[in-house]
Image (tube, rainbow, N blue to C red; front, side, top):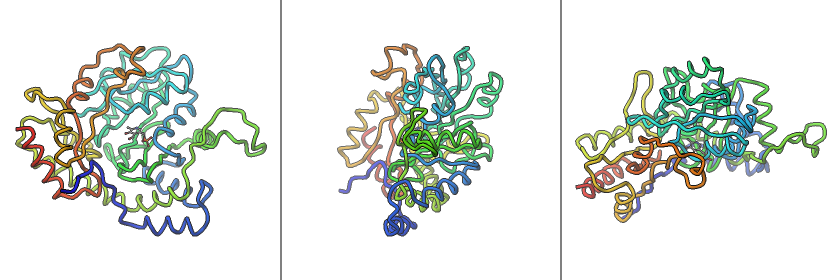
Length: 368
Ligand SMILES: Cc1ncc(COP(=O)(O)O)c(C=O)c1O
């Protein structure tokens, strides 16, 4: 029996050709033509003027927070149900993340909780589109405008997705993406910051490159990182970008297949299919065990693993992180519940429909 991994990327376009081109050209570091081409084509695809390719999505967030000048004494409001990269980007820059809970149905940040968390220290809101469904951006944009707050949009999981026709990644002062192997576009490891603001784009470029000065290269006026993306990775990304529309079609098809097969399963909450103005791209196919089922996600995932099926747990809420929670004692019950009872099933761009049928059949037996 072959193991069904939680993700299988599809490298079925010009990936090999472009990577070999990069190798043959000798441009293997970040100084190479594919980097700029990837930045230009990707930023255009999400309707942005500038793209700054970086080594991963976490690095993109570190840079975005710093580029906006957010630092000690300031706060950034974000969902507790997200990856730790969001909180760490704020903490590493000396500021404090302030967490809000998520909605029970969409698992996205609860917009109604934001206003009560705004203080004189709030500098920005960081919406994070979770698991393939966009955050309800219109009310969030209104709040940001009312209080004059910046938006750092984490679109790591939302390549090619739209909200009322506008691309995810086109909302914040700065928006960020990840190109990790489980994303719709992968460069193995990689990320991108996009913006329409020339000054911010220049700042991000500098921060990704150790704040080298054009005139006096080894004299530094600020603290940056080596967060560069290589030409080899950008070559891969360019080929992946060419196939983005097909990858989205594929992900949606796999998501629908799960939805149809799980339709009559009363023990599981499945993802929201669509909302007015946007639909689910099923970056991952998450399920949450309902209360009637006595076991938690870890127990079911263990059984699935022994049946040859890979899964991943949901994010563990930020306010419950051992490394952070000394400072964050809030109770954010929806996130706490879904992180205990939620997990996601195999659904990479390269996952087959037959594999999904196998997953659902085995899951059904384990749950019964
Ligand atoms: C919402 C979100 N933000 C940021 C990241 C971090 O991206 P990376 O793994 O490329 O550092 C991820 C990774 O999956 C993510 O899901």
